[in-house]
Length: 73
Length: 252
Length: 228
Image (tube, rainbow over all chains, first blue to last red; front, side, top):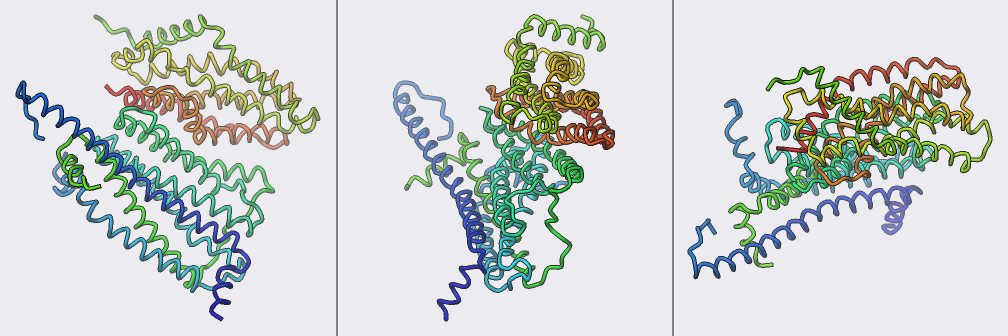
């Protein structure tokens, strides 16, 4: 009985081929829209960290010779 | 600026404050979106009875109609923040306008495809050159134009201002397109399909629809805030508050 | 230093652009050639039946002219950006919108007018009835300046970017839909013997509006795109 109800639900009165793709597309597009900024955020922060690391390495090297005008680290 | 604007608005306009504010609000909005989305889908897919004319195919409206509303709502948000960005040159308004565009394009795309999937069984064709459908397609092209123009510039703020200008032109354009296609349809009779007759919608179908509309609104706020936060990090890369965040998330 | 009067400056601007265009006559003929080739391909693709060609003639000519104009649109400001004279124009004391209006007019004279001149030939190739020809010409006379004006705003917006014709087409498409609908609608109505004045009147009112607003929008867009 329960299986049958599920089958009826999935069949969507014969319109399953239209209803389910619509819902699948809805979720796929919105999940992609959610993931995009998450991935972008990771990339931005990674780039920033490498830039900071390079900067502090350069400052560490040059500070032995001339005191660089210190901007806040 | 004039002093009738309360102070907290000014504060919210500054990137670090907004970043923190959005970070607090965003998870709540996402939770609300998921909650009301689940409720709306349960009501729409399970509880609501089948339509006596359209059978179960009408259940596509529970995503199609909210997405259609969102596609226009987001364009309005983009247009308003474009005006703010161009008139007052507020960085946050530029970011909001430009980060709204991809979300709006996504909703417009969903609207067009789900509309086709609904149209095929209902009036036997994937596509018809009706004023509503054509306007929606033009809206998609407007979104794509804004996104394309934004990315064509090397300087992002300049790109944002140019694209904001295009968005404002688009706002004027959409009603003109709608009107002209309407006129065109009366000229070329024969292809006119009456899509939405005046009909009363039953409460059992209406409340899931409204709940889904609410869910998409919450989702938009969450997604927008997530995008704006990311964009602010990229734009303000040289500032101290961003560096602190970058260091704080070192443990990946 | 005395500023040149506005009307003198307008005339000078127009003369300069027309002279420059005349020195590169080859560029003027390119859109015309393009329109001829595209129109010629349609009978080959669809077959030479008179009735079919007659039915599509108006629309084909309109779209062909539109595409040919789009092809030339990209070049509207490009040489002026390269040699820096556009920046000079922006800081000139004369109103920028008026100067840009003159540039748009010059561009229309050099690209759209030749296309309108050969339109009877294009339409003749597709057997458009002679009685409909004046309506088609009138529709083009109203629609092409509208497209030039709208296109100029978009070209100004992309002035600060590396050239990309595809982006321009993407941006222009939503804007030119109403113009195409009304111009083609007028021709179709004339062909069916229906009154064709109303769509042309809409086109005319749109053109009047664009003539006032588009140069202003163009100036604003240029200021954004060149952002000092």
